[in-house]
Amino acid sequence: MKLEFKPVEAEDMAVITPFIGLRPNKSCDSVFLDSFLWKEFYHVRYAISDGKAVQWMMEDKGGPFGAMPLCREEELEHYFYEMVEYFNEVLHVPFRIYLADEEGVKKLNLDPAKFRVTEQEDLKDYLYDGEALRTLAGKKLHKKKNNINAFMREYEGRFEYRKLCCSDRDDVWKFLDHWREQKGEEVEEHLDYEVHGIHAILKNCSSLPVEMGGVYIDNKMEAFTIGSLNPRENMAVIHIEKANPDIRGLYQYINREFLIHAFPDVALVNREDDLGLEGLRKAKMSYNPIASKESI
Image (cartoon, rainbow, N blue to C red; front, side, top):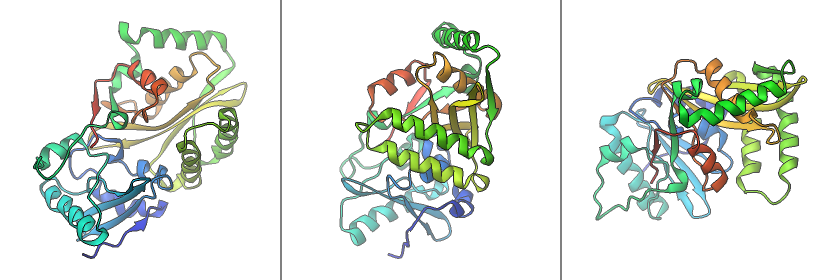
């Protein structure tokens, strides 16, 4: 079977983008930037099959695994089983797939005698109503609004939200260096790879479909965020959001302002998974998600 996999690079966006959005998909990997951000951590590679589909190959401590192919809905079954065959006949290992979107799983209707489909709690994306996160209306989000008001009172006249561009990369790098130092040595394995991924985005931001925003206090960056758009689903995917944790309301402020300025009309917001981290899970649940999209 001739599938030639190559590492994902910034210039591959032009090759992969035509295949994105060919079928319904509300997962975070429905946009190019997610694969690019984590390309080192998961050793992300891709192959074009028949000029009709993108096949993914990744790797973790358990060995190689795939993802749902990017293709038309009516061709999903064909290209899914192409990868099953590739794993069986070429790699000679059992087929594994993560980050399978709910729509794709339902469409495939896999035989339970041949495939084990399990929901991974740690890998589920959190989906939110876009207007709810922009307005923070209602009792369930009232505490978020209170925190923002407290931040704005405390730093009145001293803070500014800015749309970031490639020329602001030095500010982000300085912020990241300080943020990483504050984390110390005993941190989750993914953090350094995440930092590397952010650096790669900043180095190539002029050629990537990326939106960025930052909050400055006394002209010093204290928070920044990165997102991209899935136009088919009218959905923003928030890939990165970091802020000084010692400043009350700063996370809530940049969360809201980024959506207002960068994604004023999106119906859905995907804030990705919680990595199984209890603190992150609690934070994501506190925003009242409308759904969490399953992974298998």
